[in-house]
Image 1 (cartoon, helix red, strand yellow):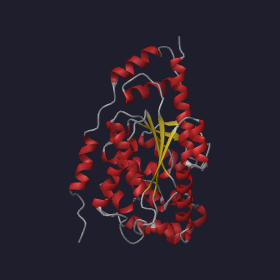
Image 2 (cartoon, helix red, strand yellow):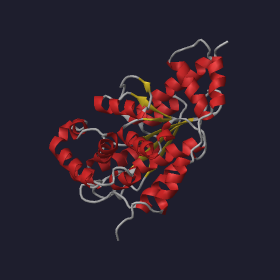
Image 3 (cartoon, one colour):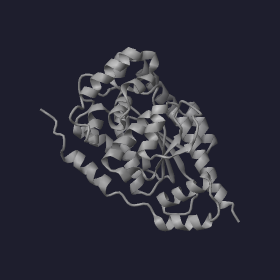
Image 4 (cartoon, helix red, strand yellow):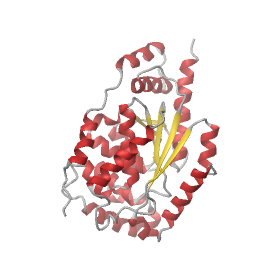
Length: 319
């Protein structure tokens, strides 16, 4: 049966995106008054945090949420190595023995990892859509669980061994990034990646103005879940940090769906790829750390969260 491009599952997501609350101008003005005469990046971060949260900037319960999903196309490219590595990483985090566990403990940051059916990869996007509409919308809804238990800063990324063909294809389609620039991100697999990207892009011909349709055809479960986490955080006035190619792909889906849906989101650190840096600027996402300090998104989130928390502490210490 042919999947409808616009059905009830996606209509619910569209309505949610259109009904997101505005940022809090009163809270922004209150913090701006406290920072009168102070014009620097830390002051800007404090004002942004107040506008997003509706209160004075103070971070006491930051949380890192990582989503993990597997892809048939990646298994074809590397014989399943990345899926095995991902499963190992999720297991170690769940056991509390991973490097990110120690980092979060040292920085007093909560940590959640969501295993999104790792044993069942999404379909091979070089030949068929990754998900059907119902599954994609359901995974977006599942991603909203990221805010369960509460947080005053949500840091979100995909847990992945390397940038996926799935995320890169979404960046190419929705971000208007050339295949050449996209392939350079995975330059060690030049021709194989190029062929799979080209095949994937053919799946969305005629649908590029519908970002949710692009998501369900090209995206993984982790991309859909990050969309849900970002939307849920906005509905609860929780500022968001993202990092990594997959999180950026999710952000692009939401930006195309509703441009103001990313007003409460910042990118943790500057990507090392120039084309992606340009894309972030065009979307209007501001970067917390204007340098690339690590290739791992989960570590980038902690670095960005540390800078934002320090900015808030600086304001609290002002006479």
